[in-house]
Image (cartoon, rainbow, N blue to C red; front, top):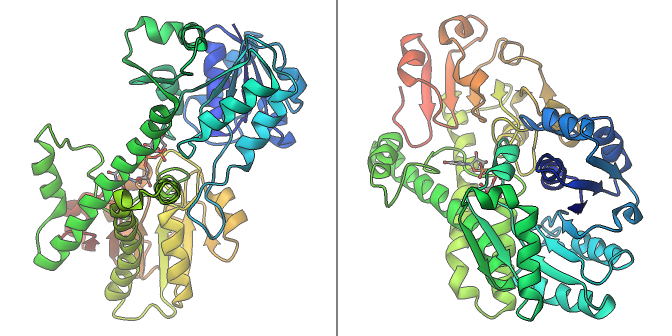
Length: 439
Ligand code: UDX
């Protein structure tokens, strides 16, 4: 099939290369010239395990190309819309300008019988509105909504081996044609009997926001339990293990710590609340406000904990922050809890040095006021406290004995409950973590 992908960020670039890997002829389009130049040369514009190899392999096959000109997207059977829907500045609602612009630009190249497929996370109701626009401007052209569920750090795997496919299809006679076209796009995945949910636009849009809201709620639930553990002396890690053995609950996404960040969960739950308000159904989602509040409180608690271990004052204290990305195996710092804590510590007078295996360059650009170091040892030189705020493998595997020789004070704050408490305390460190007793 001939496929075009509009928007070559995390989602779009991985989707374009993956579709080429599945055997399709793919053109990826983005307005960002630097991004397209890098992709054309086979260089990933962001850190994502396995993506570099996939990109080079797909380019070498001759089935994948990139362009900044939407006219190069013309002539495809399917056009995926993979642009971002960030949070509007100062508001909860999603900023839809990139989706609007992408669809607008497609109207100039679309022809009858072709299918536009939205993958971006959008407020429920968007697909219906866009389908009307597409049908009016290009009679015979169709629209479907096909949300993606990829996680950063596992983007390639999640795209090529998704745990389900969701098709939001038109209600009219185009329904069958659109379904057949999507089945052809995902032929290999469909053939593996991957569960498929075929539904209407609104349900497909809501599947994505509901899934992300559930995940955020699960994280905030365990973090609320962590608050209680702090008040009672109980241990949230053991609690999570014990409730997680119940397979109705499950252990995944019950890791207590600094909470969720990134370009999806925080903005998606807020946009969902905003949309519910517009629909007069805000009461249904008031709990998400609490989910957000619990999440943000963890960051404040982390700063308090740092102050506590630093004898009640952060003024002039040297603090090493290990981790800047919002999660390991990513260079993404959007709404990163780690950088938020680092900035708060600095505001309270601490001398903060941040390190990260992949996200320093991005961090420097956005948070130039912080100091950076290449390695944990460099960051922790003469530190009064070390905070592990993103659980990169490199940090989980630090040798507490050797690392202890670098710092001024052996105090470690485990913001992700990722370290071996016994090993660190045995090496003479004061160990503190969210939701767990001091070690
Ligand atoms: C998320 C969804 O998982 C994915 O399905 C959707 O398509 C996009 O949004 P992503 O933002 O890449 O993916 O990250 P995810 O792995 O979900 O983690 C989100 C945040 O939650 C991270 O900051 C992570 O550190 C935090 N988290 C995750 C916890 O604090 N505890 C957990 O148990 C799990």
